[in-house]
Image 1 (cartoon, rainbow, N blue to C red):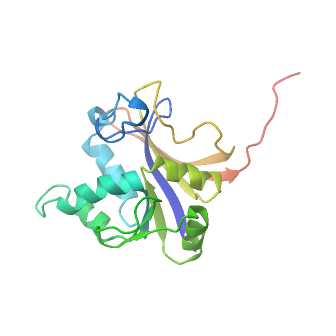
Image 2: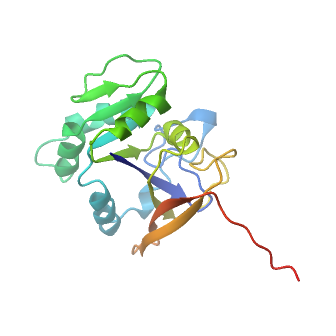
Length: 206
């Protein structure tokens, strides 16, 4: 049995769109691409590196696949990014897309149209940890189908007011257990949560 973890960069108001650059995702005329970059540091790189160190596979949406496939195979062997490039290039990748049927990026498989069923089948196999990177639409689909075992969220000290969110309107209600949290030298909070099922409720009324 495999597990599925979502690794996501978020603003304080929950936006996860285009953290890495202005051209990453312009959907909805999003004007804030690259909001993550000023807060990134070696300390955060170490935390994220630990999270990404031993994936059994990657689950990617088509847009994230296209960005990664155009970048990571081209990293020079003597680059500081070479260790991460090696992991991402060699790891098995499963892409949810209705617009492509194959990929030139090594070790990449395009999932069937019924993505929840295809991912549930992967989860029944002994593949280790499958990681969702970026891929907001895919992440939201997997959340709706209760397929996520762990959320690894890096929360940045910036508020944008617009943009696509990981936990968008209509997200299935769920309680979460905090497993760990760390704060970086630039004020980023890196948290690990695990779902605990439906939320519970109470009242402070007399």
